Image 1: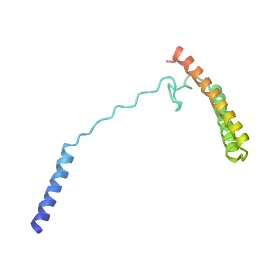
Image 2: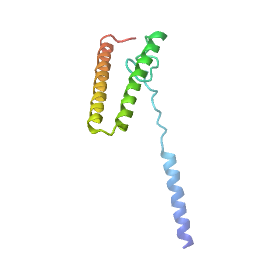
Image 3: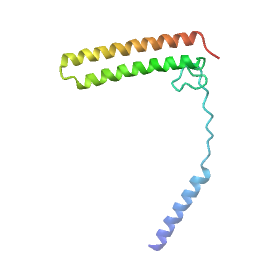
Image 4: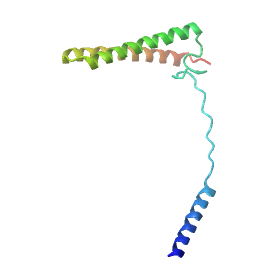
Length: 116
């Protein structure tokens, strides 16, 4: 029995050594720099060509939209009346559609005049 445990231990050790010796280090290519659109707003992002005042205005606009969405979400969650709740959901959906249309229009403008 002792012999079989030693054999199993030796085979496990051999398997581990074989696996680690044959493993390859795969180099990941560096991430491509963003061009055009992006939520990270780094160099080459959608805010690359903006002045500080324009960036501030853009961020305030985003904040206003987020606050409206959160306010509507909170109203929907606390509303007990089913009809009023559906009305609030419809209002929130309309706000989402308007925001999406605005973002798509901006995306189309960015595609037509790429920044370098």
